Length: 143
Image (tube, rainbow, N blue to C red; front, side, top):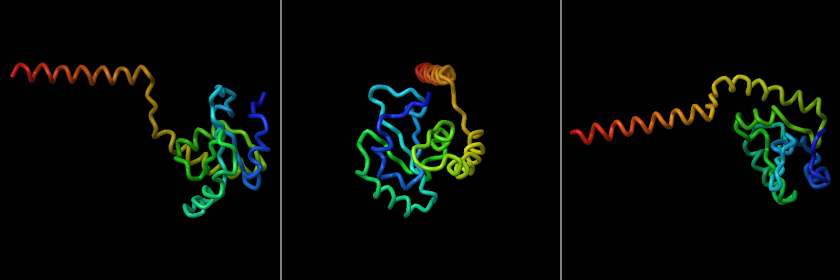
C-alpha cells in the first residue's frame, strides 16, 4: 500500500502547475514521528537562473513540514536516490518517467564510480589508521 501524508495535494496546491515528486522516508513507507516530507519539483531546465527564480517563488508557499527542492539542482547521488523510489504527487507519471530517463542514465553512469564502504570496512580502515599512528608514536619514542 502506498503511504502518503494526509492532505498532501491540498498542502502543495501552490506547486500543482509543476511535476512534483514525493521521495525519502514517506515514499519508502518508513516515516518516523519527526520525519519531514521530502518534495522534488521538476522545472524541466538546468538553467541556474531559472532554478534560482523558481526556488524563490516556492518559498513560503507550502507548510513548513515539507522540504521542497528543485530536482534538477540536486547532486547526482541525491537524484539517483530519488529515481530509485519516488511517488508522483502532481503530473503525468508516464511523461515524468520519460523526462527522468536521461537522469536515470546519468545515475547509471555515475553509480559505478561510487564506492559505498560497509560498516565493517569503515571500522577496518579506522583500526588500520590507529595502528599506523601507534607504530609511528613507538618509532618516535625510540629515537
